[in-house]
Length: 161
Image 1 (spheres, helix red, strand yellow):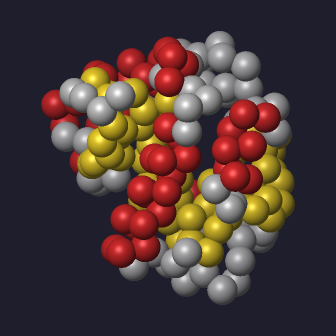
Image 2 (tube, rainbow, N blue to C red):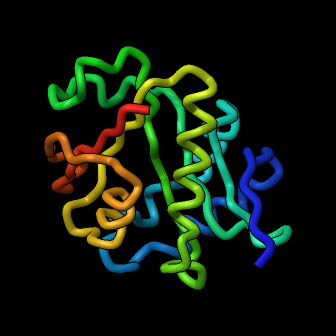
């Protein structure tokens, strides 16, 4: 494998969406035909917040990391965090799972968003997604609460960086 991680370009929107769509129906995945959609990817690309991991020129994983105030209302987040980064739409192609790809992508994102000035990373993960939970635990993220949104039961995860 020839792996590299970088910010995505706007002309890669369909490749990124295809990664997301390929995970629909995978055990623990909450995504469906209505989410994520092209508009979600385009909005993330417009914000320059999409990270991709590639094997050569082929995108094999993607994630979005940016400031998004949508989760601010939750009381579980650390009061120490003054500028949190919200992680979303983390996905690795099924063929490349269980190879440490997700961990590499998250570690890269963590370093990059810290260099921008973020002081924590936070996100929601489905309580029915044990593979994602194991990955986040392995990367040092900690559960700090739970919530129900979009008819899904979520854990809230956070890491000070």
